Amino acid sequence: MTARPTPGDLLRIDGRASVQFAGGRALTLRVVSVSDRHAYDGWIWLTGYVIDRRGNATAKRELYVRLAGLRPPVNLPPPGPAAQDRTRAVTGVRSRGLAAPGCH
Image 1: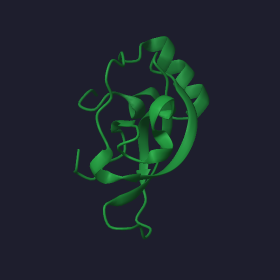
Image 2 (image 1 turned 135 degrees about the vertical axis):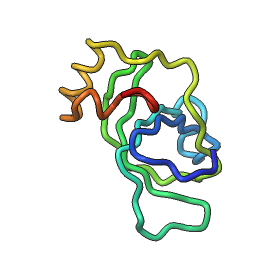
Image 3 (image 1 turned 90 degrees about the horizontal axis):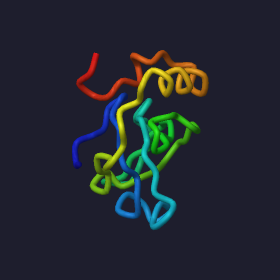
């Protein structure tokens, strides 16, 4: 993925995006915002929610990552109604705002 992410995108953040996420530190992130603050060429600041294997938001994070290292997630089920309710409780965001890209 080399296109600039947008709010709502779901991304896999691993060692390709930054060495700090190599190995068991990889995570899936639902993008909330993309910062315009200065970054080195090819790098970007993202804010989003870490998404667990069940599709639940677990923590808000701000990350500095390589744009060329961002990938779509693999093997993540779409959140069901119960997961959306838990996500709303953690994030304060309505379920519609966390729907999978292309789903409305």
